[in-house]
Length: 232
Length: 295
Image (cartoon, rainbow over all chains, first blue to last red; front, side, top):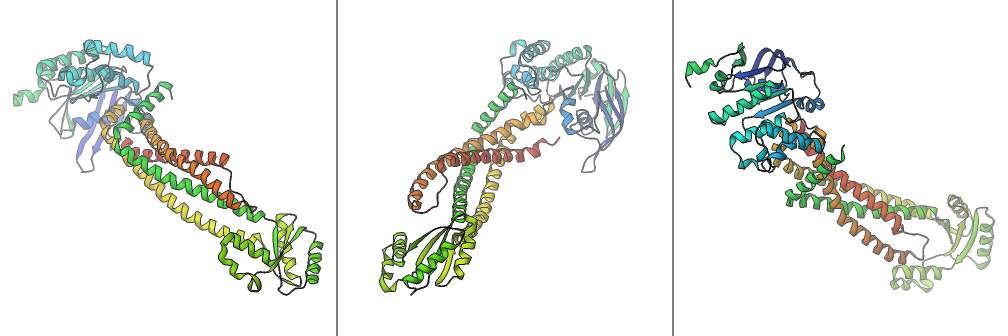
């Protein structure tokens, strides 16, 4: 569950990136966050995992009240979230298996449990056979699947994806989308910021559209209007 | 902390030391120089303190007898001194005897003062029963006739304490400065490790590693730098002290003053140097982490 109440975010350079957001995302929802570059999508997403603090307002994620949470508690909030980025953020010197296992090691899971869990999530993203390979030996789509496997390794309640298909061709992007859909069907909330109009229109979910730091649309089963207007 | 986690931190910290190469060597050298100085300084200070205490505990009072005092008058003085309750033993040392002691300590050049030109005094060396009584014995002796002066160890002890005080002030200042430089160099070295691993750290934070988990390998790396940096100073201070002790002990053999024996004293110095090394290492690492772990 994610809830924003009258949330504002003003940066030091006086730019208001988030202007009075009031949004509630229920457990198990799939939500797109769309809007042009610089609209405030990333700030919105970053506030969910407390990479950014709100200037004012209240944010609740699962049982954490983020405007009050102590720094020392932030790691525990993040253990309930999975985050995926456009640039994958894999460690080049570790194998695929190690990259996924790494996320579990640093939160001090039992080694035996780690092995089983890593094998399981690599199976989910259909990369079990690539476990001993290194990231640079994989295609972009495969690397993103590894990143997703890492994000869900700790069975998070919420998966946050910031432009996960941004660097991928349409076919690969569709593959990633299928995986996110499957994860969502198992009860995980998925919040996905995207520019990909095709995906938004193809896989219908709730759409939150942001422009100039304001929510201009919040619609179930929404479409990517910009797409039709600009025809891109 | 779990054992597996600690093992991981240990391995990580070693890898990082190796990866930093020359920067590690620089930080390590800073620790070496610092600890070497601290080690030597500590050895000197503790021994000077020890000797100052020996001097203070010295029970001897030197009663200088006026020139031209006759044999009978000397005996009279001796009897008077013996009557003091605090006096344990009195020995006579003639001015010729005193001069030969000076010649022995400072060289043959002082033989020039032999014969009638001898500027020294005949002396009664009076031993008090307890160190605290020396002052009283000296004061009483001074008032007696035929006595030129009465000196006791306390005077030299005071001088020595002044010297110790100076050594302490300057030594402490220089040591602190060097410690500061070492901490700075270590923190800079580790900052480079951190920069090269920023990507990794950001992923750790993203998946919910606690700050202490992220910090540990770096703190350990600093501690290793400090520990390894302590090795050379340890060797030098140990061998150096054993040698110095042997040489100086011969020189001090004729006095009642003794240096600290190497055994336990060196163990203490060793432990102290290792602890200081580890401490400044970890401190340097801690400083460099602060900026990177702000959430």
